[in-house]
Image 1: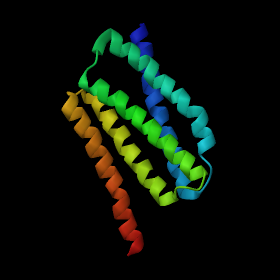
Image 2 (image 1 turned 30 degrees about the vertical axis):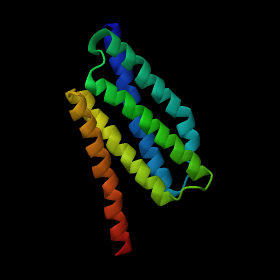
Image 3 (image 1 turned 60 degrees about the vertical axis):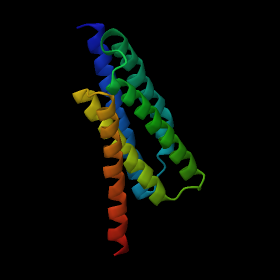
Image 4 (image 1 turned 120 degrees about the vertical axis):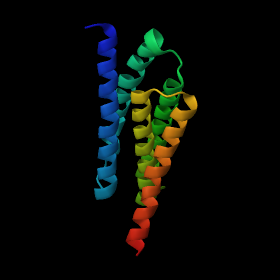
Length: 150
């Protein structure tokens, strides 16, 4: 066992935690329970668990590869959009339907990053995968709205 293996494990735990937090948020939006307090506690923990070991692994093995740049950028966007959504939902400035759209887009982005971290494509492909993931999963909210309206 070496430091890289421990960093990789911690990085993966952080990624799993992101998906756990997204799941809790989705359930909170669906069933109307407050999810923000838990996200405020576990969000920074997941950020540290992803970014600190990720930066270490980047420094010792991968460098600024395209998929690394896309992963960091996307993670920051997911966190920022999530914070914006959570604050606006708590303050009553965003309805649940809009929050669900941002939630689905963030899930698509996270799935795209998961693909990128596994396959390790170049920059254009890595960015395209995240974009396609966000669009496909985000568009599912439009299909769901049409089903409800019908």
